Image 1 (tube, rainbow, N blue to C red):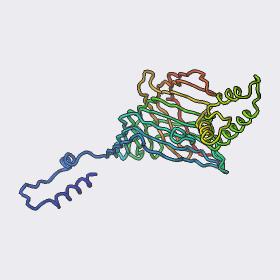
Image 2 (image 1 turned 180 degrees about the vertical axis):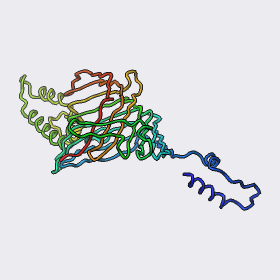
Image 3 (image 1 turned 90 degrees about the vertical axis):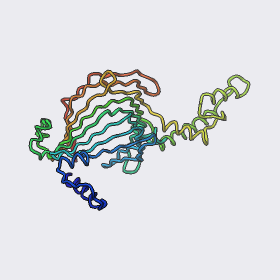
Image 4 (image 1 turned 135 degrees about the vertical axis):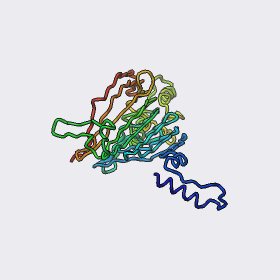
Length: 338
């Protein structure tokens, strides 16, 4: 970095006018630093309501796990990047307002937030839509250069893993360790699960329309004055027969199929996660890897989870609150298997 500063200054001097009536003096490193500014990079991101969108993320093993139509929007982000004296990389991030993330049907009608796809292309829906509003007050990530002298002690890296079956690991023995420290609050999370893909909804909608037409044709005169009363009552009970003609077709059928694709058997609404009094929760993670996998050790997390509403089959069954969540004793190992 010092070389870069000196090179920049030398270039400026070289192109300066030769009417050099001012006295030129040598500058030491301290003066150079004060003149050219501090080390590091700051990146500012302005994200409007349209934000960033991703059409599909697909993880394939044999079959495929799919996330469809991801949108991140409505926040301003300031990110800082610094390489410390010991060679560790420090990345900071702050948002000026809440970050909004939408996945699935809420971004594009008929899509799925999470779906499963067979090798033959047959797809079913697990999660219909996700709407998340999160307050990321501060987020500091340090990738520690463990080759630097005293790194483990300087960064208090003491985390270990032991699965009780012969696999042990120590973060201090890793080549690099990621330390993540964030203050976060989930302002609102809404999830719809166990719905239908658009293809499934098209089949079910068509079958429902056919059954509806069959039922209309089978109506019988119950009061001896014709079918008008029975037909009126039958069509009034179905919101998708807009013209009350005993058939669901055209735009009516499209609306029915869209409603099925956009629906969910289970809905979790107004989920929040905070420190119990509406403030942010500090979340710390230590991440390292070796030949046996990737390890994630959780720091102390003291939070309260509230689920404002739970609906099953369109009916509310109440709410849930989980208080004093502590994850400080949890370490995960992630690895592949045959």
